[in-house]
Structure formats: structure tokens, C-alpha cells
Amino acid sequence: MKKLFYLLPLTLLAACGPSYVYDETQTPPAQGWGYADTLRYSFNISDTSAVYTMHLDFKHAADYKFQNLYLNLDTYLPDGKKLHKLRSFEFFNTEGKPYGKVEGKAFVANNVLQEYAKFPQPGQYTLLVSQFTRTEQLQGVQGVSLRIGKVERK
Image 1 (cartoon, helix red, strand yellow):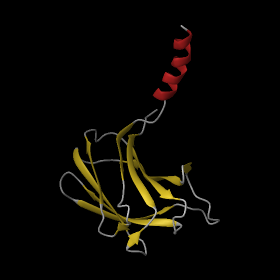
Image 2 (cartoon, one colour):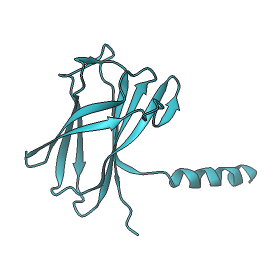
Image 3 (cartoon, helix red, strand yellow):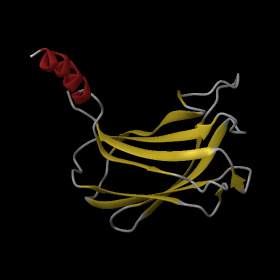
Image 4 (cartoon, helix red, strand yellow):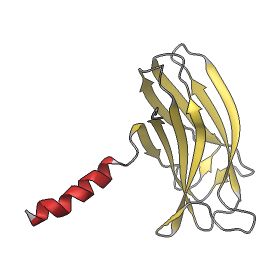
């Protein structure tokens, strides 16, 4: 009975965490993330009436050489239409302190890609992510995670 008493709060805490409809992490090449090394995320959306939140999270080395990371983001809709955006994601503040949390000898920077996203069509969407920094072979990015969750309506 005591074990059940201790497990119940843990079960309740686990149930309160975020729930994602999509959560995938990809790793750029270890020798460096080149301009041609595109990360591909494909996900299905069935509920077009829902509002979603989209996050891009980056695991990077503590000695990452830049304050930020520029990315080309190409989104392909189910009907084949392509949307393009160039975005900058900050890894360090102006004093050089990293954003995010420590994970071993690396940092994980959590970034909102789009806070209130609407998907106009049901079906498969594809997001292509490629680096667009000042160097051909970008060193220090160890993982890129795309997380998509439904926004709870109150």
C-alpha cells in the first residue's frame, strides 16, 4: 500500500507534462553540418481546427563559435506548396552566457518556431532545415529537435 502511495504522485506528475503530436530529434553530421546537409521532418496533421505550438530545440557544444544559428526553413504543405523562411536562433546572450539548460558538456536551447500555428490542410507536411551560417562546415550543433504540440483551449 505504501508503494502505491508513493507512485501515485509520480504518475500524476508524468501526466501533467507536455504532450506532443510530433517529436523528433535529428543529428547533423559529426564532421560538420554543411550547407547541403538538410534535416527532414515529416509529420501528419489531421485536425485543421486545432492551434499548435512548434518548437525547434538545439543541442550544441559549450564551445559553439557563434552567438546564434541562421537556418533556412522550407515547409511543404500537403498540396505541394512551398513556404520559405530564413530565421536566426539565439544560443548565447550578449554577455556570452548560453540560453537553455546544461546536458553534460552541451547546452540545449529551446526556441519557439511558431507559438500559435494553424495548419490549413489535413495531410503530410515536411519541414526541411538547413544551416545558413558564415561557415561551410558548421561545428558544434549536436542535435535539432522539432516538437509540435496542440495548444489547450480553456
